[in-house]
Image 1 (tube, helix red, strand yellow):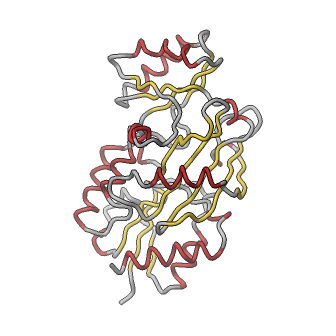
Image 2 (cartoon, rainbow, N blue to C red):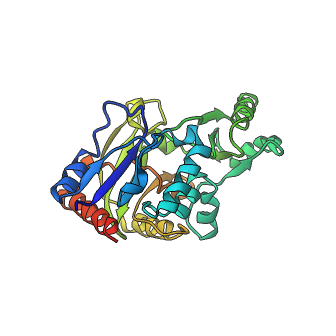
Image 3 (cartoon, rainbow, N blue to C red):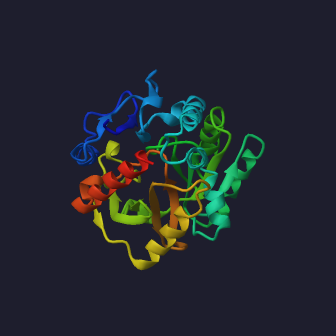
Length: 290
């Protein structure tokens, strides 16, 4: 009997999203029966040997439902990454755990409905701009760079609106290098790094996602970054099969981890060497077979 594998996705996946196609090819070459069901479908999830939440890019819009979906897949015993890691990674409070473990992260003030006045502390960052983002989010949704102090009132209103949906909002110094260098990512699977990517926004923007016209290219992570990334992925409470570590090079704080993506990260397979795509397929097959 063929090994059955589900790469779960969201319903309204953009038509331009074809980055996983090389992985599909590699998996089918191994004889795997591959399907890409919508995570919100009433599919027979227990029939799969392995379920990977690959492109579930609307989870932040339905966090409670998605958490229940993770719980159900945990009961089925066929989920990748482990459920404890996925639950931990859904909320950006994991950045606190990284910081406690000595991983360099951006300074963060955690805003809640009870301490919203703390947004005034953005002035203490000593920068012309600060940055807001929700504690659950993806694709730069809900983020806001703002000038300090002239736009602090506008920023407070934005934070108030976010707190109607989310329990916390992150307040950080805005990193000016993102406008020029963009973000950097290190991809991991099967316990080892695969490749690196630099994501560069369009001029005048800070958003590095395809959705906003950003470009990306292969990047060779220096030893310092690989060390930081290795230490970051080791903090995950349940272990991991795949991960992406996103970093900024801040002019004051140096290399900082800004996201640890272990839930549904783009893997930028368009920049991965062929042998690394094959290795990912082998890793998933081995896990599916137990």
